[in-house]
Image (cartoon, rainbow, N blue to C red; front, top):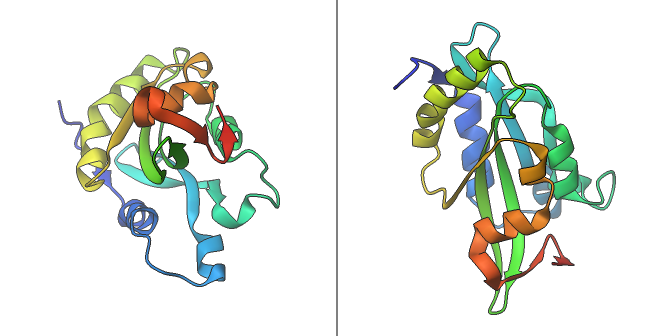
Length: 166
């Protein structure tokens, strides 16, 4: 069921910037988003980039030691969100980077919020072409463990995530 919610152009721009890894200067790389959250606008008619809820590649090692742990802390405990996380991981064969689309719907979010986010998910997913990994998460227990993300990315072949062995 579609909700009639539209996706703000800025959301699409953020996705395209995260998806396309063109050769960039060091400064451009530092400005690239590692993770970002999206929410519904106040009138619940648009999906927008949530102000201040992002991690830049340049923050890692500066203000952010654990990008995944920091991303988890950005999630509100009592409301839904959509997120994009640019996961860097290694398998036994190679290093990889993949975008993960996360639908965060914690159990103590209001029912109305869960319903509108669930029915609007297709609107944002249609704009995010080429996403290989989608993950619906219903609580911190599901998302806090990096091992769960590793399983989503490649099952038991993932040996490290964000430079840390699993």
